[in-house]
Amino acid sequence: MFVKNFNRSIDFYTRLLNATVTARDTSAALLVGPGDYQLYLREVGSRSEHPLGAIGIQYLIWSADTLEDLRRCESLLRELSPHVTAQTVDGFNIVEGPGPDGVPVVIVYPGPDQVPRDEIIPRIYTW
Image (cartoon, rainbow, N blue to C red; front, side, top):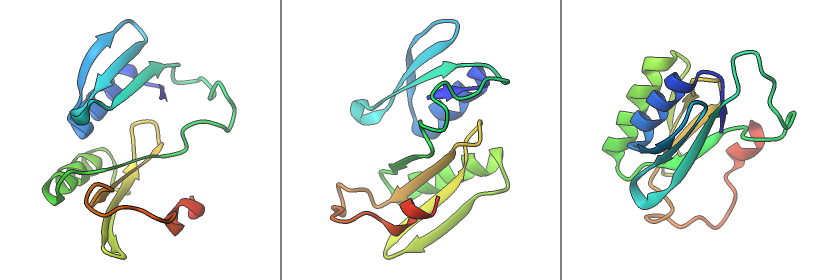
């Protein structure tokens, strides 16, 4: 994920995802979280355009392990921005707010381990 402010993004995503920085240099870091998922952050600077134009990460979405964890994520998002929504749709709890660079961050509960997905949620088409 390309970011504008490296240290701010590392702090935000390690806290939000309960991740650990396992490798880092002056402009890139590897964050590894529970379940061994990985997120690379690479600083491109505050005035940089997205290197691929309009194609790239348009939003980051994942699921919380518990409802308590979802509420923890909601609190962290609210520390960053007043523009956070929390709602329940079709039995899914959804929290959405902007990350440090404005990329929408969406967290859902329950996750696909608890409730398998067999269709695309309509919300995907409204971003």
